[in-house]
Image (spheres, rainbow, N blue to C red):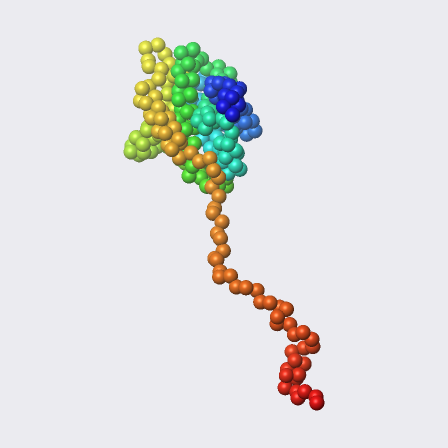
Length: 296
């Protein structure tokens, strides 16, 4: 038996190969269907609608749209699909496989980071191609770092939130109601008039630091910091806190209501129908025979 266990463990791929395979598999699932269409198509459409036929557009102008596509993928699309997989019993079946639990958990988050970063990069590329905006190599590299850190922060926090969503029907409304207020007050689509206290709160949410970091990187010139330290610290804090909370609250089992058992009743023996049934005739005939005098 020991030889069999050693043989089966020797046949298992390395942890690195398992994680890489899981990332590739989950990325293909997430990128299929509406994820790329919404994560890339919607930001590009909004970018074109807001800028029209302007030939000269600064790179910082479409940083918000790139962040919008990234967060839309890492928050809404990923969160809803994770809840759907859990409630369908997919996570429960994955848990029963020899794959390490942390490998599936981390592989799903990293796959979301890959797809979300691809959505953000595609939006930036569309802006450069459509408006001929110049982006330096250092600016593109800084924006990529901000994309990766921001996508991880949003995906980890979304994973933690899914533990509180009981059904698939409640997934999309919950993710949207927690998403759009943050996006709007963070000025993702442009500056808005808001109280100072609300602007301070927005600076510590994961949307505004992401937009600011991407915009600063894309508009990078010599002598200026390409990645603001405050933005990186806020995104890193959200990534660490979201991951820790996700690990602590992650659910593998579906949220299924406990069936209500009927109240227990005392067992009553079934009446013996044969004992109650007269041997012959009806009940009236038996009564007549009981009172009638016997013939002599």
